[in-house]
Image 1 (tube, rainbow, N blue to C red):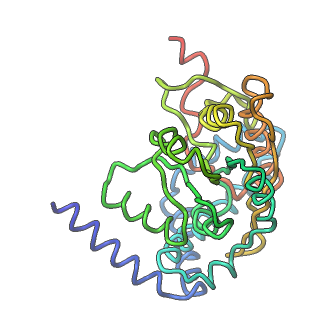
Image 2 (image 1 turned 180 degrees about the vertical axis):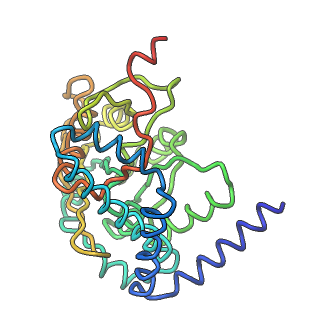
Length: 294
């Protein structure tokens, strides 16, 4: 009961902070960067090891520059996440642009649902909100529920403010079957890590074998829904754009793991172009292929 009460107080406090303008929140972000990078060294060993494994060809100085820029951006993400609690439709559309939503209509006009992949790159939380304006069809955002029920409920409410429908990962198939007679747009965060017991496939990602979920591929082949990549780019501080990139238009004709490898490789391409905007503090490589067979 105490934890639940404290959570509600924290959420209310965050809501009050969210009413502040972006420029004030970015002043907080500048302070948070100093705390994360210089004072607490938040997960710096994890970040440094991830960067070393991903970019062994870069110099120590180059990796250090990426590391510092990442922490600065991580602080910005925290500030922007707070702003998303109460952001207006006008401000959201000002800060996040969809370049080609008409691509979805082309598929919908052919009576096809669409599956989208995106990574923990740029502001994926803001993308969950802006995708609410991508089409008039139902927009599903697949996510991993949090253990704290109050926080999980709060985040679902925040993501669904503009029409996106949060769907727990384990409920994806059931939900898509329920909606099989109408075109939908379903978005997956594709670079999450499966638990060791559920890992079925490793692919090459950022210079190392990486466990990946096969959910997008399985759903695409089951429904023959085209797969696109939601290519999010940072335009400048606080401003983003997203371009829908077709990856696989006829999933049932694709080879085994072709869909998975394709969306993973596209995400890697995006990361290599501007590395600092990916979530390097995440413990993405918890185990290796040989660990699965022990």
